[in-house]
Length: 369
Image 1 (cartoon, rainbow, N blue to C red):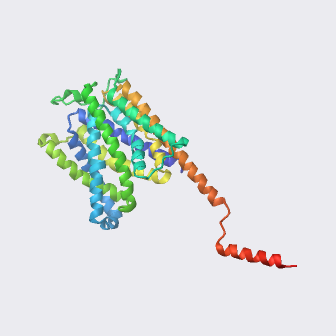
Image 2 (image 1 turned 60 degrees about the horizontal axis):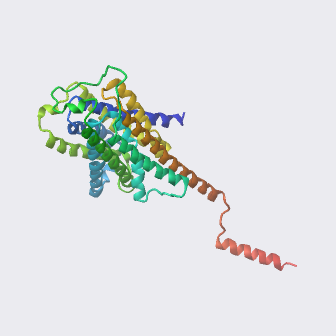
Image 3 (image 1 turned 180 degrees about the horizontal axis):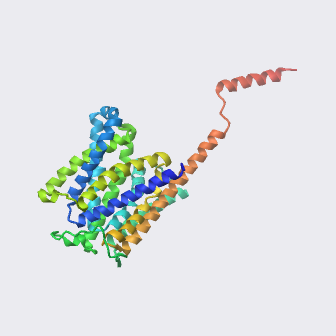
């Protein structure tokens, strides 16, 4: 049962994230502004995170210095505000499936930045190193196919779409069209690439902040969500000042921001930290393709955007790149564990005093008749 709990938790995390892609696409199709959507989801997430943070971690919050708070604010600007805006635009201009497929590049981009900052090692002459390099190359090819090749468009398998509520006053009807123009599709894929790259850098920098400045994941998550809520509000109010666009109502818009605020920001991120603590980051990253599979299945029932052949090919290459990098990491980990076991099982090196005592004993033994 102890082995099944982390697996179930990882599956719940990926299904939660796939729901974010589906509901974000549905909210954008209904005419909701991307920047307003991001602000609302961050605001709702903050409201749900502040009470447990104050209740359980108020001592850690009080110990934060001005420098620590500035680091958290800048992390939120990179990993929450910029990433969410780029990801939202990417999903809006492409499809929920493309957004989930591009998400599979995250472990590869994270490894690349960790390598540049010397947090990871790369031994090219070994099989593990070649697997990592091959994974990086597959990642680049997969993202390129997503951006520049659509291919035949495969319509949804079913004609009922529970989350589609087209916005008739939308001045950009191409945003809700099953086949957006080529330039719009390329722009959306570029935004997804920017989101993946910034997310990888954000994860690496977040690990450094957790190690040196803010060791509590709950405090760091709450601080970033609160900072991002202020940042996205400034962006949203600058882009859209019409009060009617800020109204939610009892519709897909309210449901989408509530889902992202409660399940994605609070539940999904917490479960992700718990799984990493129990089984390590490689275990959680290995379940990332479940996000793409869940989104692909759900989009056939709930959305009208369907799937293009380019999305399937690019997503498959991204999944292969992911497993190639993870396989290389696991091999290196096995080698390190083997070396540690050999050192622990070997005879201990005698100290200078022990060597001197042994020498005296030998001299006494030799002097005996």
